[in-house]
Length: 337
Ligand code: ADE
Ligand code: ZN
Image 1 (cartoon, rainbow, N blue to C red):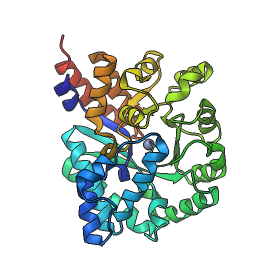
Image 2 (image 1 turned 30 degrees about the vertical axis):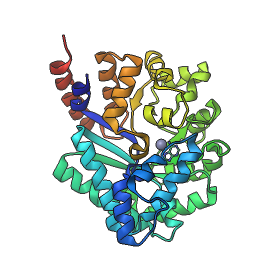
Image 3 (image 1 turned 120 degrees about the vertical axis):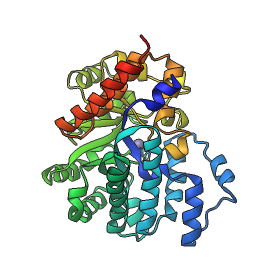
Image 4 (image 1 turned 180 degrees about the horizontal axis):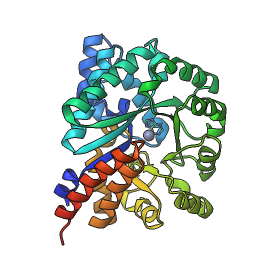
């Protein structure tokens, strides 16, 4: 099963590029930029990765991102992730970035976005990985600041497919950003939102109704509302579920308690993703494997999850069909009869 999952052609739809910053690279970039980290070593930093909830993680995650200053830093960060993606046979990836984490420190939007974009283009040519970029607003900041961020991003609109919403969920409902998302949709962006990670099902309803979200990031708390589950099922609104993240941030007490299998069996369009792999102990294959083992997922269910990843992507129909064909060829050869 391990080999089956590692070689499985996959799509990833929920990865914060700042959350792929491994301690080694954080120290390397910090050293060249003269930014001191409050940890003596890579090992000491890794040991600090014990989280009690989303906020306890975000505090460390924003601190880590402080080393990123130059266009090359954003390139190196993205390139390192893409090489890991290649090694795990990720054929397509949709990457979140948090511009406000950087612009609030005086790093211009252009530097952030150009570094990331350049790595994505190189990966397309050199690694054969296609990608989309999703700009996330930090929901703990104001709606006015989100609007300003959207305006700063407009010159780069051709490089950005969608906007999203992340950071501290509880107390920052999607409705706070309804106007910003209206404007984003008028400007031609698709929309997604983190909802129902720690927040209640009501936030998922708001993401759908007020933000026009095409996918819900996490969404695992939808199970508390049967009408919501039926709405997500009948419209096949994808959930980008991040199993290792949910256990690390204590959304579920253990992987055996995770709702992924129940969501799948309820007919929802569930996908598997890594969220912040450098912090949560695994990239995409590790997320598939940990859930498969804890929940005893069948080959058929793993195949379905992988299929959903391509179906739920923002690729056009032709591109989806091409990648789905690769997946089906693999499944027809690799699934034990
Ligand atoms: N930013 C990075 N990872 C996140 C998560 N899992 N939830 C909300 N915001 C995030
Ligand atoms: Zn996330």
